[in-house]
Image (cartoon, rainbow, N blue to C red; front, side):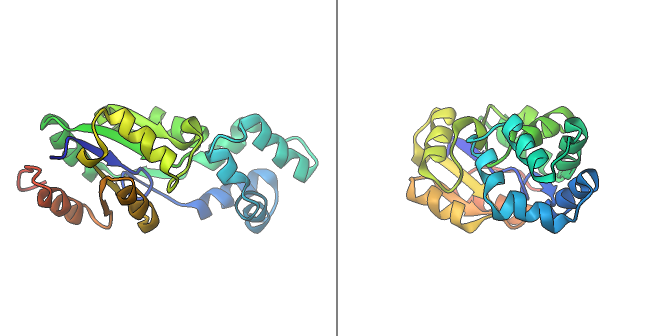
Length: 205
């Protein structure tokens, strides 16, 4: 029996665009987006930041060192974070799961700057009992450690957890850890997947 539902955040509960992030940051840094793509993505530094291996001070210092000048941190952080749009059509499903007694856990590869931006502006977090964030647990999906942390946060066994994520490799890793899991494609398909696991959900969601 499923007693906890674990949700990825990006492309499930919120829309986002890394290309928009690079364009907006490039305006602040007075450079081309491709230069930032190489500095942050291709170098692996952004993943290290999301894993909590470097913090905001270190990442900002790396950027300032690269461009050999001071860059206003609040302006740059806003440019990096103002890339999200909340999927309001997910709220009724989250509310129904919550009302039915499910424990809801957010399980996300994210950064402190992104998560704080979302927490200050969006409403979906009110449905969640716990948030397992990569930068806090110092582990990224699809590593087993982050799934272990999520199961512990749910307070049930792995076999009593359902997880959805838009990335297939993360779903495979969750299954290997013992969770029930289905790749997120659309909200109707997710509802179908939940019903297949005997979760009672009303029509019209």
